Image (cartoon, rainbow, N blue to C red; front, side, top):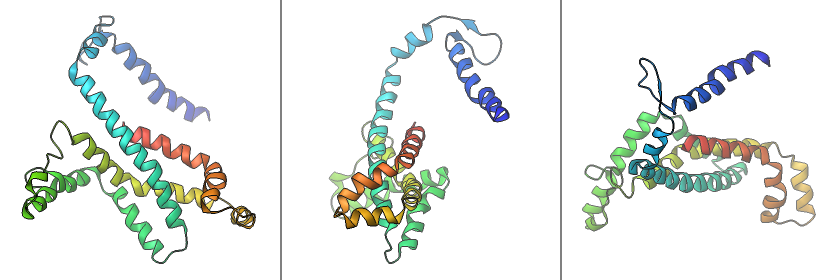
Length: 212
């Protein structure tokens, strides 16, 4: 474990402390850093753009995390059953996760752009132009649109992790609680979720790091 630990310390832990040290200096990346104490933090907390970006991040975080955690788990429960076309459905659900981020951006620009976007053009063509909004590029709806886009891209990936977790639950356990009279909801809350704590923890960490 020592080589791995050394790499982790050098490339992850050490740069964090170096960055914290630089935050107390005035430094352009060239020349010598000059210590200025808490001046950078004072400027930061008086910067309206900082608070606005923090608000937008909070909106994206709350909306996307709740949608992803709940719906990816429910979708995994559905796809884990032996349904017709289950394999095809899994492939379709997972497909957005393999699309390059730049392509995702281009796709959704053509959907959400206020002028050339599909949504607004459809609304105008059916006489509902008053419902056309500035979905992206504005000051109100942009973080919500970002949350939906991130949700769309990550849903399949997180669902796959949950499906893998469901496969690890012994069938004998589920059959036993079914024989004992537990209904579907009770099996989920008292058997499946407790036995999937590691998968749920992994998904939560991926959601948080991905959103930020």
